[in-house]
Image (tube, rainbow over all chains, first blue to last red; front, side):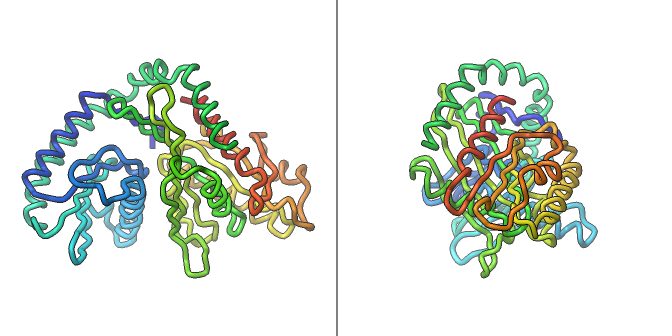
Length: 165
Length: 191
């Protein structure tokens, strides 16, 4: 695993959101979430008002990671899709470029078959966007240095001091 | 590996509390959870057994607020300390930005600390990470108990890098924030 930060710039972020919104519309799903494999939420679209997104991101990544270990135990590299069925809402999870987890939350307004068909082109869009993001990572450190300069660090440290007073 | 989103102007860091079973990792998180104001923390999640032992991880999201226009967030995780949960420990280290090693100061746990530290190094290696490259602090917990190892012995056995260390009594909140603050500041410096 590389130790580079995952930096997402404005244009890439809008491309990601546009792709997710297209998938949301074409599937009529409740919400879509994109989570880094380490459990950090990247973005979400749809109706997420009743979902604790931060917890959801962390647990979805843990779910995927634990299931990948199960896959290894039976000789698979990882399971590329997971499906959890509930009475009202369901969750479908798939992986993008082995690093990003795409979660679809959906209810009775759609079905698993449609999601599996429609998600293919979205995953292919996201693969293109994230390939581009990953290829820029090494050159993005300059912008990170500029943004998170000594002023930022000083201000953040002072926030930390306040937090623990 | 922090996630920096320049569009939503958010930066998120992951801190993992590592260490031997029953050493006080979850207690650290509970103390932090109780102390931090509601608008600066999310829900604390514990994937624990019925006996209240951590099975997979505990998770506490914290929001230190907007810093120079960037929402700055820390996500705190603990690992299960028991030896047989190594697969879970390895998974949680993925994408880590900073590590707190919580050592149990009791004499009878001396070797467990060493084993746990060795295990941390091994698991980091599997993620192609070196402890020297990661913001890392130690916490010597349970300093209020009668039968504890000396700081000198603990330092020699598990802190050959001489990284910052803190004495703590996590159950009373002593040393908890100092530890977290130190690792958080190291992470910010490394940005």
